[in-house]
Amino acid sequence: MTARRDEIAIIGAGLAGCLAACFLARRGYPVALYERRSDPRAGTAERGRSINLALSERGLDALRRIGLAEQVMADALPMRGRMIHPVEGEQQFQSYSAAGDRAINSISRGALNNALLDEAAALPGVRVVFDHRLVGLDPTDGTLSFETPQGPVAAKASVVLGADGAGSAVRGQLLAYGLLDESVDFLDYGYKELTIPPLGGDFALDPDALHIWPRGTSMMIALPNPDRSFTCTLFWPNDGAGSFASLTSPAEIERHFTEHYPDVVPLAPNLVDDYQHNPVGVLGTVRCTPWQVNGRVGLLGDAAHAIVPFYGQGANCAFEDVVELDRCLDECADDWLAALPLFQRRRQENAEAIATMALTNFVEMRDKVASPVFQTRRRVEHALERALPGRYVSQYELVSFSTTPYAEVRRRVRRQHRVLGAVVGGAALLLVGAIGAALSRGRRA
Image 1 (cartoon, rainbow, N blue to C red):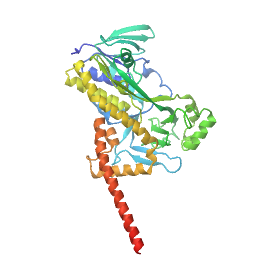
Image 2 (cartoon, rainbow, N blue to C red):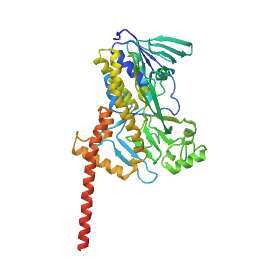
Image 3 (cartoon, rainbow, N blue to C red):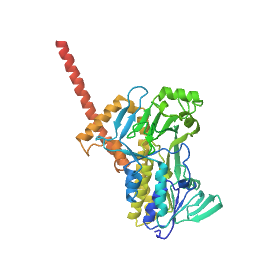
Image 4 (tube, rainbow, N blue to C red):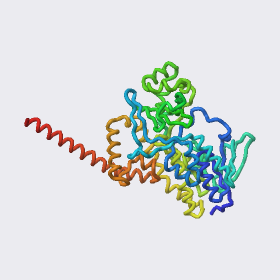
């Protein structure tokens, strides 16, 4: 068992790392939180790299446990549904919940990270060390090697947690030792951010919705910000027609947006500049196993299971990891040798489930949301939810507005879809019967 006085090293002072530091400090552990970047609270955000977060119940549950939910939500903007923007015609609002009263929350990743960092740094026993890039890790004894502006630095910890994102240096070290297997599946898509500024001092679009421009094989989304701007994110193919590679000149960019996103052009005066100068990010799914080695080194959040952002669950899932790790430590009386394998057994199936759902949701967002068939199905689902409260709940509501394990969500939704199929099939039979009867009457007339 690891004694309470032994220091835990967390690599990565992002969202998951800071939250983990808060939970562990409250358990009485001294914590060293190492971050390769400089203190983000003292600088400016990297251009085009924010991807606003959609904070939902799983993330809020974790924040409530450390008393931070109310502070974080003070600057959040609730989004109660999707606003669909066709190329032509009226916008259409699609509620996330049957009653229209539930919302996911648009929040700045940087602001949330800073709030968590402040909370962690203020707790007794937590020391935060910036400008430390991990370059070496001995998984047998917890020896750490860092590169810093002042030169090499060595450290040691009883337990090392890798919370350093999809490109995790901790995972890379374990991979180099041959202690885990890894797969990284990149999409043939990237993302690029644009900005819609305030219009006349107010929001240029409805701030109560997540806006989607579905275009079949690509899409754009927009989330509101407290300063009344919107952060837009293009999810486009990397190559081919209508891809990032195909548009280079200002004239090409303007022509493409005028054709495919005509309502955006007058709202985004810096469209061409944003497009030309903001970077294209990569999108992919990271899987690895095991997530821990000998109860001494463990991975959590994106370091263990990065997913694509199309369900808005990346941060929420990572926060849920921290809650589950805390629960495992409780059940194992802080025996890390038992707690880390238990954590993986409980979370890996759920991580795989949300990874699959996120990929599926990409197809739904870029294509199906504009389909009359999809819209009819959603109306039927909401009608069933109202008719069978608590017994029939849509996948979206279970993922976003509950803490039902992701794997259980998938199992429950499969059962419900059999019911939905029967209802839709029965309705179709009734319709066919009614048409047949009408035709028969017509022939007799």
